[in-house]
Length: 280
Image (cartoon, rainbow, N blue to C red; front, side):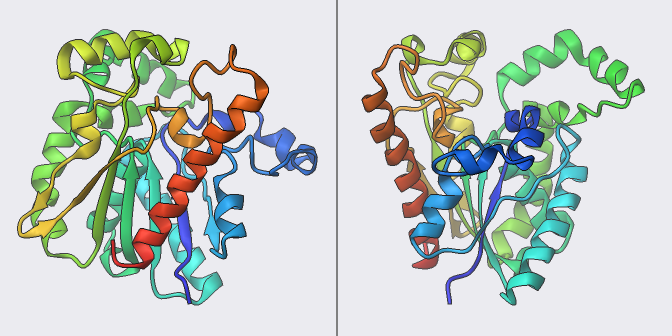
């Protein structure tokens, strides 16, 4: 039996803005029904190919420790529901950090067979460093009004370096197989809201997807003696393209040109799952 697949979302999942509409019945008019979800049409694509898929939610922008604790509860619920002993996790962006913290800090190494990350800032990102230097005070202010944005602090190069050092021995010795995917795209094709961070990151760290540099998403090829499989995303992509959203030149491309791109991205996730099942 194939192990269940858990899709772990990143910080500030944009579909939270209209999720109540989807749950109220809008989804039944969409084809595929999850085309407007964070992972755009990916769960249904995997399910059509015979896999059992879950896309749980964790706190919107809370600190990684809180998000990791929530992810643990979601994974345990999946295991109870399916009767499986482990899951494969495919995580986008901060979701990869959530999963790594969950595995190391919440004793979940024996419940996760593989962790595949896409566009995860394993080494942090200079954009987070620049942003925190300017508006870290805003995180405290919004917290006073009940909006928890502490997760942005966990994306800094300093915070990720501290965790990487602390977690190294545990990740090197646990049975989890780690696979990373890194993407990048040229400035001209980056989704407009990502152009500013693209410039900042390009100046500091080089090629990036508009939020995460390739070097950070690729992470490392070794954890002690354990090999981390590093893959390039199969198509040029920005941070939203990695989710089958906002393909290159989205607003200018003819409608018939959009579907093939999204299908390529969804097929990339199918390959990730098959590689996980076959031992990476």
